[in-house]
Length: 243
Length: 243
DNA sequence: AACCTTTATAGTCACAGTGACTATAAAGGA
DNA sequence: TCCTTTATAGTCACTGTGACTATAAAGGTT
Image (cartoon, rainbow over all chains, first blue to last red; front, top):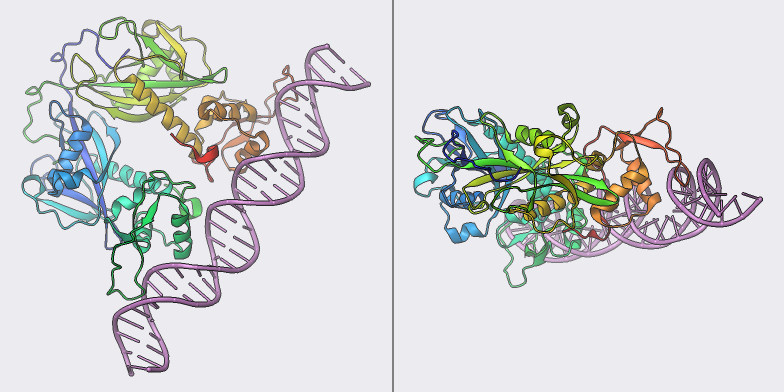
């Protein structure tokens, strides 16, 4: 009848534990990568799992997710606060953890290509994995990872999210790489340019920035993310093939 | 580090309560309506709230949402199992319920125009409200309702969800009414027909069904929902104005 | 230096989808 | 018999797109 219990005794039930799990993605070597941690305890000892952890007593799921993201990547709070982090969905099957009732609020984070995580504490035992070749993960994390990949692919179509995978300055070729990697397709370069540049607020020229030279061909112009969040019109996947 | 605690004692913490809240929408009299219940207890006594309730010990959030939907609408389990129900997002601010820590997994349900809920038990005190004129709801339910409306409006663009608001047989005019009501716009009728009929699997003609007569003009052909779930190409809102 | 390869960028063209609009068909009511 | 109302069919100009060709600017090779 409401979000809240009527005459509910907090200690009468077996309590639910509430956690967050994180699907942290990056694009590295033209492959979508995901951050995983190796479990040191039963159950699923030795298996790899999505990073995550418990909500503190006065912490929202979003706050817990950002805290875990900082811990697992070894990045500073300031750096982490600039990253894209959003709630994915909540997983609450009664037997998803064999030990007790755990409800997990899964989140998706997108980060630019970062060095291998070598922070202290929780970040030890964390590694980037090719998201398509993780093997079987602990708990229901295979499903969470699949849902997160689907969501990211879909959001690239109608949001400016792709820039979240890029460093502060990037070329249109790098942005196109993000799309091609996440979608697993090859896009026509002139057409991609035309669509990105025709969408106001998607990217803006980074005037002062020096072009990166030393590559093979003509140096590309640098851009930075614009202030738009939605894409109009959307940048649809070829063939209309969705999951 | 994982979905599950390491050496966690289930009774050591103050427990979290986990609930579901439901934003149940219907289109009635060319207005979007939402099902609300009046609170009989403090806090927020006398305020209206989204229907909802606790997860049972061995129940997933989706199962709890479908159970609550049946209880609050007074419909049979069979009827309810055919309705559209999907997870919206999870609300976990520490103080969203003043009595204790409650994490709520909000869901959105779409139903055809139903009679006023007059089931037993929880359905007493339930009423359809114009979704734009609910006044201030209990807890954080104003925000949940706003998020749910945004989600429904966005999903009409790229899914076949609009048929979930319609009875088993419907006219294209009724389907257009759904779009116009949810989006709050007026659409061109010939263009709407063309787009809907051009999308394979969106609707299919209901051949045998007798046309409804007694209206003012030419009787419209009846259709039923097709088997497609996604819309290609999407049916975009006019003006590109999103929330 | 002349040339090739590579990558970036500019432009062309036919076609599909769309918004705005007009025209016709089929019902009930005055 | 009109007239109104709603459904359905069709037209037309414009936009965005996919496929493609052309040019520019870098490094490397001989």
